[in-house]
Image (cartoon, rainbow, N blue to C red; front, side, top):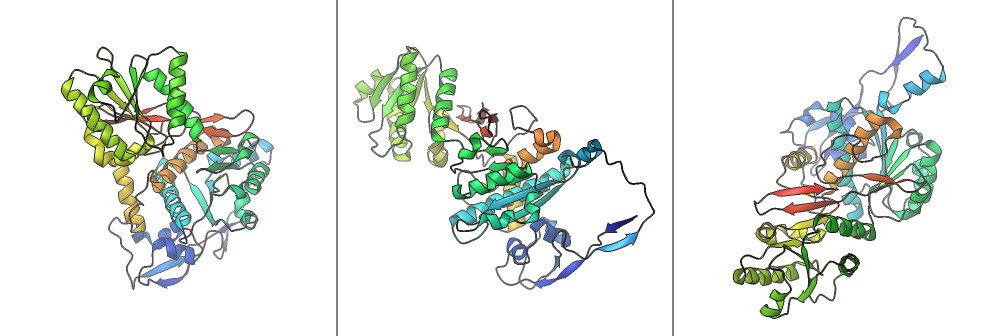
Length: 443
């Protein structure tokens, strides 16, 4: 028999113009970034910089290069039993076929954020290679006004093992039916309406609703601070949306007959101090997540501690507080602060620093100043699922403890929703200790 052997061939050369990027050139020629880099190995060098006037090689897209057929010795055909066929197609024994269906463009914020998320996926694909995991990646631009049915007609889409997307709820019906028909795992990364989760076992939904996060946070709060005296501070913030959390927590405290006190930022020093226990550790909860109110609360508490230095005070905050670290860091440490969140961007982490540097090398720009960082989110998501599929095949369900992975920013723990898909239920408390350490307590 004859086996088709594809020789490494170059489609052409490209002279770099001003402001062109690796990402843009790859899109121009409808090839993957990794294919462009493979054809130009110098791009992998840490000091590499794409410059105007450079001449780079443009490869054929995967599967489109001319095929050179070379004769080989006759070999016996493998057995065709279903067991052998099944083993050969097991995702654990071959390259994992990954699809990305997101708005990958530079037209608006959605596109720019998803491009950064996609770049994180690319970096994860590069990282898992060191673990012996091969990846065949395909990406499709699926803008809000695009027809996803056209994308799904691509033969490469039906061959995927896993797809990351979509960003828009109106694309869910077609994509849900598609992944069910072709037994593809679908990872929904961001906050969209996806009722298909309740009936489609192939769906992984990462986003958690505010209600679910509130309920989980209240449950973990009650476990961790069972011996504390809760103090609620009314911040007089008419724009606050934290009432669901504070009212829910107060109801649970009352159901357990746990005493708590309520005070106000405008209360007198005497009235304010009476809300605190001098015999138990106090856990302070504000009904606002805004930075100005937090600053006033810290000033008020600092005055209280000056007069009553033996008071034991711990602060319990909101995810938004992670954006105020530069302003309030010393007080976070001083008051043993806990911040509940579904993610933790830690710029002091060596792992974070390495990925941020790698991002600059590969894409000649910094990640957007957003929380969470979209590239790190893409990296964590892809790394998690690629590791899981490689180890467990399509039986991977993302449950806790299936393999050891320390996420850079975004932990994932999935639970089955009845007879439907899997929903992320990860939660962590970011803890600023009096010893000036920051730790992530995962649940």
